[in-house]
Amino acid sequence: MGTGTVRTEAADEAAGRRREQRGWYFYDWACSVYSTSVLTVFLGPYLTSVAENAANADGYVHPLGIPVRAGSFFAYSVSLSVIVAVLVMPLVGAAADRSGRKKPLLAAAAYTGAAATTGMFFLGGDRYLLGGLLLIVANAAQSVAMMLYNSYLPQIAPPEERDAVSSRGWAFGYAAGSLMLVVNLVLYLAHGSFGLSESMAVRICLASAGLWWGAFALIPLRRLRDRRRAISAGKEATVPGFRQLAATLRDMRRHPLTLAFLLAYLVYNDGIQTVISQASIYGSEELGLEQSTLIGAVLLVQVLAVAGALGMGRLARIYGAKRTILGSLVAWTVTLAAGYFLPAGAPVWFFVLAAGIGLVLGGSQALSRSLFSHLVPPGMEAEYFSAYEMSDRGMSWLGPLLFGITYQLTGSYRDAIISLVAFFVIGFVLLARVPVRRAISDAGNPVPERI
Image (cartoon, rainbow, N blue to C red; front, top):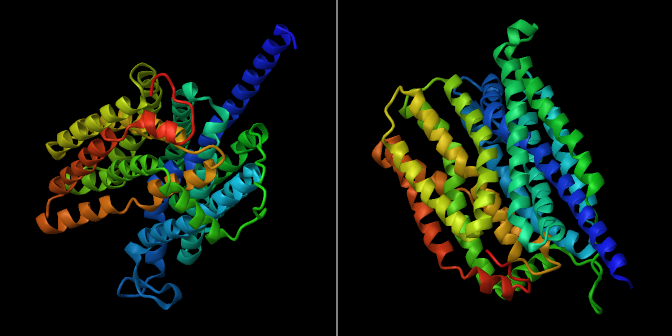
């Protein structure tokens, strides 16, 4: 084979890889509007109001005969969706790795979530049970789809490209979330000018996120390729789900450094998720800020997270992913400490806090994903990323629990917000102790020059 032929094949391979990467970015673009517009902004208050419409004189609804305060129905639905996702993700991950058919499973999860989100248009009157069911389906489907999506990263990007590719994916997602949130906020705030009721405007915003998700998911589904994995001799082509899950957990015990990283990620990511979910409560209850200010702060976080993800991706090329993540955890600690001292009734300083969160949010998540991709044994991407996604979504309850207990004991949201510093400090210590080069080598992967 001539040198020219080798070069041509290498160029074709690189072009094909770039095409897959560009398609991969678009799944973040497709699904992030669900997280931003649906979960973060609109669905919680709206579903709560629907549940209140259905509540009895004491303020309770009775799903399946169980008395539940209307104000708690949204939170319980989210919790149940997490339980469903945690049960389903390892089974789907094992099936994806053993069959090599990730793309059909990704399509099924994505369009299940998109259809459920689009169906939220019908959440009128007192249909709180329909809302809870659609939320559980959409949230669990998004978790499963994200697990499959993340597992493509080590297949479409060589080690030296993963930090940049992962960062671009997060940036695409935050850009889409920002764009759709602006459109939805215009519709919501000016609904009267469009001849719409407030309820109808919210329902359109919810359904539009599902339509966006489904439409743009077509791009990655056209460009990503399945990579068939040969089944070892003597193994069954299919293994019952829980037997495979048990096998996956046993295999992870053979890679204790990968587990050590997952533990560190579980801790500091729990802090990140709690800040995201509780910042609006801190702003409204402790600082006395208006809803419009809080929504504007969410939009600012989304916009700056694009720059933060790309900027931290560049820093990782210079200093390595691990050092850059450690630096972001220091930044998170400083940001929370500053938040403790924010004066009440001062929206400008709250926007400054939101800017600080935005700049470190995207990069922390993007680089954690790319660093973990180096620690996954070849051929087990979906199974291991199911554990990663479980750490991301299924274990993020310790932070809210600490936040709630601290407030209950002290009566101060300031004390509650500063208590979250513990997650970033402990996460920093745990991550600093992980020898990532040895962890990558032990997983059977090539060690990048800078990591």
